[in-house]
Length: 272
Image 1 (cartoon, rainbow, N blue to C red):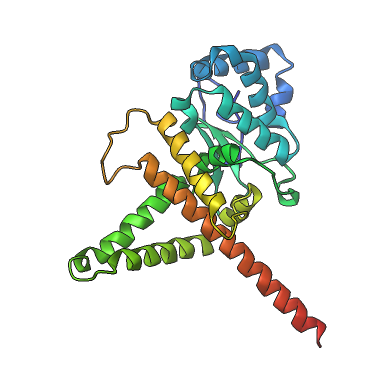
Image 2: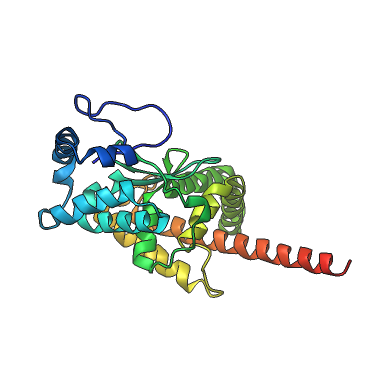
């Protein structure tokens, strides 16, 4: 099943659109619609565990047609359970600035639900949070890989100084978090989506972010079992785990900073 976000439609196989919108779903009642969906499923069915064929088809239908954001997100999580780990990167939650997030299954685009602007926060466990975090694409790039690039850029800034400064590691970490924080502050739509899936819920001891990092690392290994170990430039499981921790720490800090600022503003207004 395929789907639609704003923009042009691209043919998938013959005249099968890469987009599934509500009209396409309703058209499935016709013989032509059923034929198109069958051809599309034939294209992607090998990505999924054979024991979950019917459930996967139902989840794709829900992802494309549900009227609520929560139902579509639950369908996305269901698909992460039904799809082979090596194909999970084909499930994407795409976030851009100034537009509603949308989903992709391979190159098939699925729009946000109509109620995205009125969404209520999700309550997900660490396993599901890790899956969703790895699904996120921001400005067409995997979010955690973007954070990895920010880290590498900060390391490059300090590379000439590491032989003379004993506190270079501490300085690099500080600059890395500053640069990553600046990135998030220029991406309010991304921050809103991260808060929606609970990334603002770190605790004061950072135990929750640590658990998230460990889970992301475990999931990364499942998705990329053939990665070469020891490559310092690769997006390794350990590196992705650290990036996940950084994201949660920063999003939580930004959430509390914003809440405290709002409280101060409310207090000032009440004194007038």
